[in-house]
Image (cartoon, rainbow, N blue to C red; front, side, top):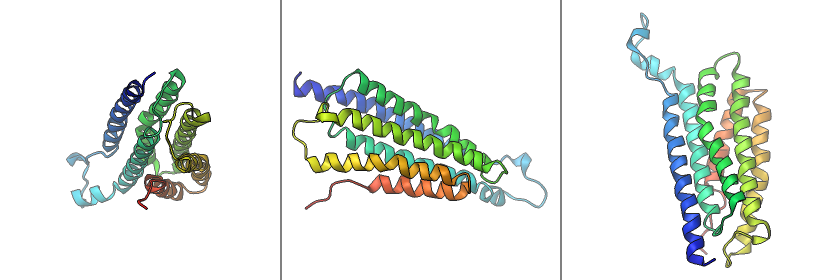
Length: 207
């Protein structure tokens, strides 16, 4: 198998994945509902109705930051992965399945964050992120094992850094999942911080 063929093969995986990421991140805005004029009661106005939607804004920003970080890290993984096989395609497919599912727990969280069932909604949201983090770990572990699908010339420090990141990612999101049973708000805040952290963590710096 030539290097040119390997690059075009993984290029198709990236192109398809980029499309799924783009659709999922776009669907997030649908979690924010425009207040209807007929629902504005006496003494209320549009501004107060918009401000009351802050749980929806919070859920949107958290999921947007999370998907953006996932897209960044997916791109980083595939700067090193240059070969593919059926199992890698299925690992990537499972990851995309969970990514496209994320708008649902986002909507659930936005709707129930101020409700008595907030902890359940928070657990579903954080639990989905745990599943995504585990799938990311599985994808990278499969591709990187013995370097079977990686580029032939690659810095071992980069492999170790990515491996370390995906080793601790599921643990961090599992912590957010556990916290959701105590406070959905704190759990969401932790998920937002993790999204920002993983979005910037691990990219090589110029020497």
